[in-house]
Image (cartoon, rainbow, N blue to C red; front, side, top):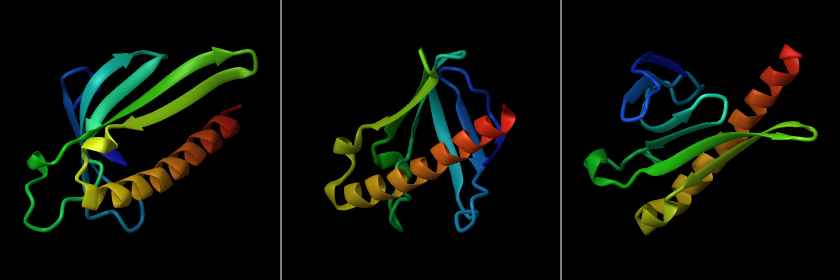
Length: 118
């Protein structure tokens, strides 16, 4: 993902072109909610690509929260996406399924990066 515009600061919007194969036609826009360096990052985003003719601004956004927590074994990265209950029922399953698969892939990428950096 390339983020050419925006700052990761509360109240700011960050936009970027998705570079993951098959999704290059999409732009990701996130509204940063909270940033606590080395502890927490949260933002709101559109959990599913809107259907043709639907204004994305009319759809609810989910909240994505990354937290870091020190444990006896090292650092725990926790990822929670909440707010699916506000997504229209006919889109909810698709949004959850797509995002669950995407987050699984991203967590694997993060693990690979951290492991390679050791």
